[in-house]
Each structure stands twice: as structure tokens, then as C-alpha cells.
Image (cartoon, rainbow, N blue to C red):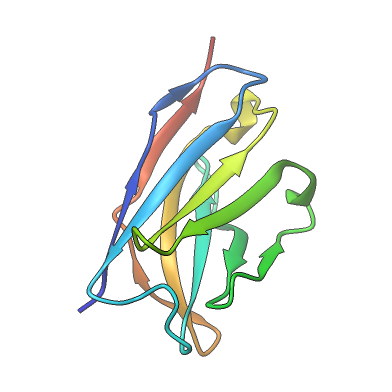
Length: 118
């Protein structure tokens, strides 16, 4: 069974870049059947899809975040990463990584809280 685990700093200063990594176990991020996503949930708000990296390394981003978001991968470590630049307090959220299959997100990490504050 696949497992995903987010890691990274819990506190980021405004204007800096938020960087998170998702480590995948029990399955390969290069598998043809899956893609790998980042989602976040600000306090008191719903889930927001941020972007995805496909099994061939292609990336797709939410239009509202595209200018600030980058998703990459390290196949040797079976990890994929999120970078969100120029953060503001509005980027404070629980950040999740998830596996996408057949148009749905079928496996999720437990989530990691990131707070943007000086």
C-alpha cells in the first residue's frame, strides 16, 4: 500500500519561498498509472488544488498559483517537491501531497502545517 509523507519547515517568513517534500513509499512516482499532487487547506477554508507532476515529469498548475508555484521530483529518492515563492500570510495552510489516479486523489499524506509569519 502506498504511503505519502510531507516534510519541510513549519514556519516561513513573508516574501520567502516555501519548500516542501513528499516522500513516497510502497509505489514508484514513475509508475504509468499515477500522477502526484499538492493540495492545501487554509484555516477555515476548503481544499485548494495547487498542481500536479505526472509520471513522465510533466507539470500542471492551478492558474491562480501558477506564477508562484513549481513542482519537481527526484526519482532516485522517490520524492516530489513543492516550491511556492513570495509567500504571504494568506499562504498559511495545511499542505498535503496526494496520489492522483483516474481523475481522483486516492492516497493522501497526513498533511503538514505551514505558517507564514515574521
